[in-house]
Image (tube, rainbow, N blue to C red; front, side):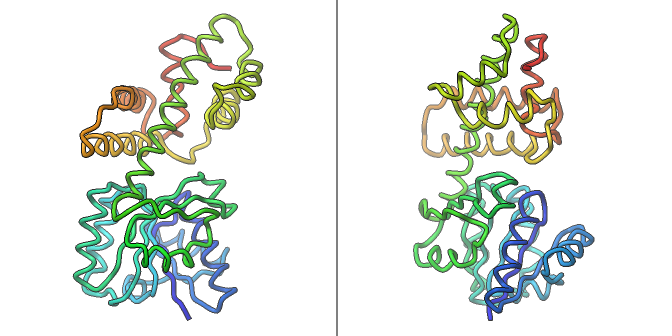
Length: 294
């Protein structure tokens, strides 16, 4: 019987852990959950049949998965579990973390006989709920193969390279999201200024070469509708853009568009707020253009 533990029941982690619980029930295993706010862990157990665990119980799991806001949060959890961890455990970190942190965390956990993989996910809260996430895994090939069985919330699992590569790919993915969202916002704000119906313009763009996830989903569902449900905060996107720029610097690359994107999202976060949905960055574009994108 395999015991799996999940740390971090946020917007993504909560439904991801639900898939783990169902998978455990179907295969005779056990799914433990832990969250900084204990009431959320108890709610998860009541809704999905997981079991609330203490840190000492968590440390004895065969597989530990974490999905936390930052690599610093993962460092804190490692510190709380050090000295209790069972040699042979596989720790799969689904945080959108920093490649440098992944390498440090792997070395730190290896001293306790624990293997560490960086395994950030893409697909948003809807993908987490539907079990259709994409996981980008960094680490040794044999450990990646072992990890696949512990990812029932994923529709696609890709081994992208050695330790840290998963976090690097995730950061670049998210900065591309940011570029597409911002560029579409600027263009649509200009069209709105000419009196063009933005929804009609999106109908054209989304069957043409300018389409992206931003134009097909994010802007129609959140910006034009003025809903802005918080699924992924602007502060976290700004953090991921910063990691992407660190990746560029580590590669001694040149990425002026990505650097400018980082500056724009930092400004948006200061003006709109860090805890709003990331699509609310376009509210800053609207303020600069003195018009709404609708």
